Image 1 (cartoon, one colour):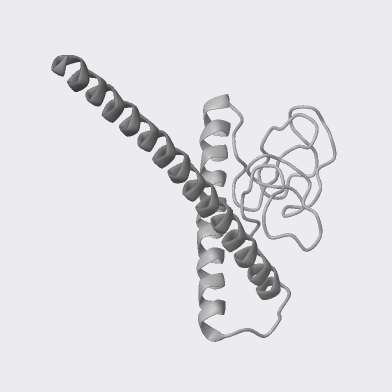
Image 2 (spheres, one colour; image 1 turned 180 degrees about the vertical axis):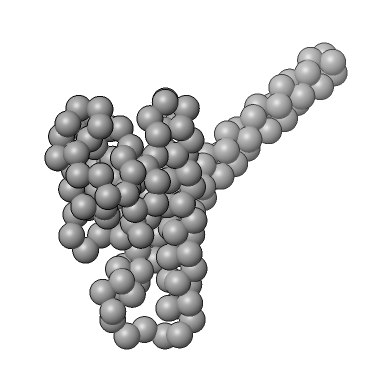
Length: 154
């Protein structure tokens, strides 16, 4: 009978430990969920202050420095995207125009500076600087980067 009592005690201990493990797992999951919620709120706070910074609102110097770092990272991202697009364009056989040239909005062929009509399809070309030199997208007034490929306008 003593052996059955020991087996019963072992089974009870195993059951208790399994119950503890389940409860611990549930609590760790709750902790993780709460931490994710906090991270989401931090992100919203950051986005709020960054929008305030972009709108020119007055803010503490440390906060403005963080926002300026975000701008630096965004510029690096834009440059990397433009480089990716340049690489894709170079590999697609569509040449980028020479400095001061433009890209035909109809066929995408590059032109040389001073060219008024596309040599490929005859379309009248806009003045250089009105189209993205990387992808040929029409430049919107007041923009610094192409809305299609992210290339920086000169």
